[in-house]
Amino acid sequence: MTLRHFIHIQDFNQAELLELIALTRLIKEADRQGVTPKLLQDASLGMIFEEPSTRTRISFEVAMTELGGHALYLKPGEIHLGERESLSDTAQVLSRMVDVVMIRALKHETVTGFAAAATVPVINGLTDYNHPTQVVCDVFTMMEHAPAGKSLQDLRVTFVGDATNVLSSLMFICTKMGMHFTHAAPVKYQPPVRWRHIAEENCRTSGGTLTITEDPVAAVREADFIYTDLWWWVGQEDEIPDRRVAFMPTYQVNGELFGRAPAHCKFMHCLPASRGVEATDEVMDSPRSIIFDQSENRLHAEKGILTWLVYPRLQRPTPELRAYHAGRIQSFLDARS
Ligand code: CP
Image (cartoon, rainbow, N blue to C red; front, side):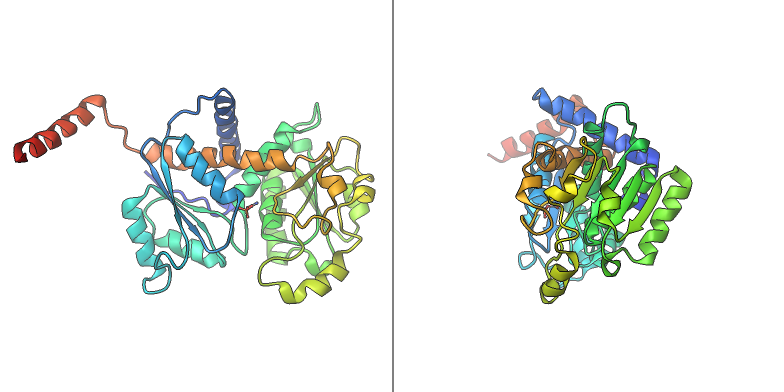
């Protein structure tokens, strides 16, 4: 069957993403009743992390366990990734031993280069460009928390803050889904033209809209969801003073800015957060904050993504075939003793 990777939201059409979200919902409903089906029985996931992670690591590992499979945590220094062994060779070796690989990489090219040589599905667990697994979870979470009577295509999502890897994927998935996406940030921290072109092309097909503005108050006025992310990340330490001046206080999601949004508006953050920087405790801990529903939904969404990619590829032998081979091997061993 055709090998599919999960590297970029743009690799999927709207119908496929909706199917993935519908699968995630079914799996979450099963999980709520304690009956997650063992759809990935005996399957293995290799997880490569070049950066730390809480949610991504734990959600993928627990997802594999609950689906009947197994996950291996592989960090640089413990495997020969790009040092002493080429990326391509590592990808081909892992492909012979595991059923799926998830990579969190410093550079997006590491994930695409690995996938080019792999013969099993490769999942992007965050790069310097994007974070597609996060935003599948986010749209699923928005559907769960949508205001009564609003369809997905009615939803208005406002991202306030830096044009991060999460922003890029969120902008792509919302515009692909036909939603109304607004980004509020100082001009210097708005998305590059090539990202906007992708999102604008999505809107032409889906009927969604894209607005990029410097005005956070106007941006939140009709928002159903306000989303923010860190203002700086690993490798941007030298930029912290400039970034703090550019964003604070205008782009901080605090009580005053949240108060400019409709009363039903929910607050979202992919986490980890710098509390008191991009968002205040007052907002993060408010009854309208859904940040921990988001975190929990990473687990359900990873189960959906893993199942969607891997289940169709697994061989499911009959009990008779299992018994035949077990019998042959046992006879061989018994003959020796
Ligand atoms: N949101 C997210 O990807 O969290 P981690 O960095 O903890 O995986």
